[in-house]
Length: 308
Image (cartoon, rainbow, N blue to C red; front, top):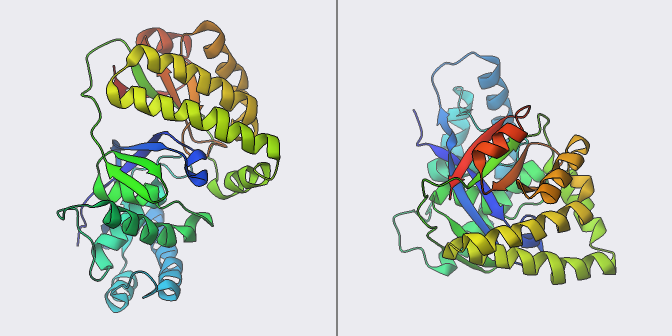
């Protein structure tokens, strides 16, 4: 068996905000992908993945038939016969490694599944997201369900609120100088501790006010600019977002990158923001001159995501 490919995702805008019901925009990232396989692979990676699937099977057995049911007999039989998830998606990097696995399990083993060929109404998108949130909670403690949803559908998704999602189109890439890029922090991050940290911060009234007044507003403006191709306005808003994140989400930014982050804001050469929950993994960057930015950040590994 070789399952279909499921791709990584990038949450362009909305990290943390979507937990609190503000907007988000997620896009598939086809440079990384994964698929379920069963081909007598005795590599350490395949063995470790199969072991994790055994643990995941126990979790799925507990949630079975609550909001989704699985063909557990088939899944158990396949796991016993060496099923593993063959993936190039780096773990702990904020690009949806567990989301792709969850999407592949749902596709292969869920009963009465919603398929990508159906008319994907808002109700169906919300139902899928709810199912995926429950399925992915095994990996993170708490999940929005957005990563698996994006991986499963492989289309850009606009999150207006928890119960208002829509498939969307993004402007065609141009062959210009500007770019969205990934900056490799060279360390992994864990989602659960970062989300717990955020939830603790949300107990502070000042922090809550900043999220609803500053963070959510500038995030919404960035999404609006990006979807409508307002590049000049977008960079102004991304700069503002970068400042807000540096001022209020410092624990989520790996320590060695605080100066790099500040340098981008001061020079206007590039602007950085969190990619996922932060704490490590990738950092998302926006620049009006990618070649110049590559030169400035030449000691770091950059990956191109989108061209303006």
